[in-house]
Length: 547
Image (cartoon, rainbow, N blue to C red; front, side, top):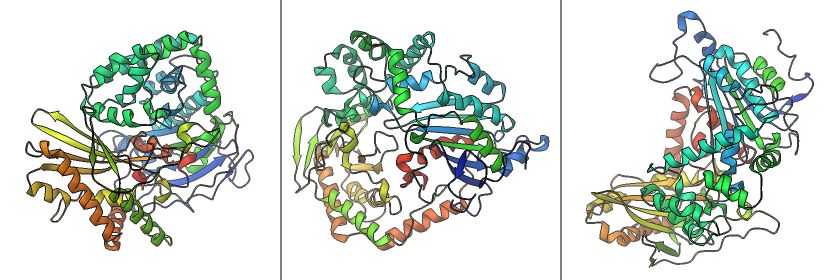
């Protein structure tokens, strides 16, 4: 055991392991890494990963051993922290506050007070860091030379233990957020769908968003999500401008008589608690050493909230496939229910011009409203009823158009073993004989088709998921976009009548099992995805993109 390591995890004071090492973590037989999961007394969920190959790569003769499939670069240690708060929690008086706080946490801590101490240490030791804010979580991560993990981890931890959030750093970080926003305006893949059309027209602060909205309309991707925002519940944060810019983070709070630094401190105190965090650490050291360093560095983390009250389900540490457990029949019924939901929708089509037109269909049901005392989005999805279907046809290039049909669905995380959305994505997006795409091609209506739930936090949240079918139309298909949509619903009705097909489920399960077994080893860049999986909201329903 390395010098300074703690005694056995069964007896060491101040913490407790959920389970003994590796006895409940399913991994590929080809995976040489060791895993351990913990719940510290503060409530922090931890996944430790020890890579023996990384220890070999630290030697001179193997210093260029890669952690990537193409063989470039040396292996690096890494860590990631996911916090269960995102832009959906932004106050109306400071849109983008969660994003700004993400920036501010890097600007020094009580233990390491230098504003650039963290970044300087990483640069000097072959590392780098980044962070991102999603709808319902924020993720911070870094990579560093394996021999410098302990120092980097301690500096990283202090961002969550005792950040400074200095007034003198605030202006610079607001400028950084505003700069990101301005750059995003030029990107077709910008997340400007958060700029609500209704908000831009009706808000008392319309001047803050009017220009952003007009610029966003020039982006095809943004225009699609603009329609989604426009049709969402007005009280739901899906409609909000959550990126943040100087207007929303300086002018709006000032008009309300609020100090931004005080708002940041309150936001941190309310949401950055151990029971709402999940940490992943990847290093060359044995698990005992990694555990010792983790407990040592995160000992001062806020302990508000329940302590170790969450017992995560048996996790799969690496991407795998559809499981076939004892509840398979029940999960199959869930797939059938999803087919029902999609095949019998009563739809409204919203065109890019804003005009409404009906697609004939039948029956749908209301979604539940927010419960009294809860934030609107905590108990209700962003759309009023499950029979709302968003439709838009827009030009992505001069020579072709795309048709997007989006189905708001309930959150499906609890069904991660059967993956009903992935099952339907496979069938709807199939390209072989007898598929929807083959029928569209035969009529010269379309050239390509894809289907599924998007990968962002705005597509896949705790109360809803957005299942989108995207069809690339031909010039002949453009004026017949509603006919294309009609064929989709005919196909969905056929799937509903057929019910869940066990042979399809088995085929997908077998394919994913092979991928799970023979996958290449995940690199340090994958660490943030692990931390998202281990968030409290996900521990009993693993994220589908990781299974």
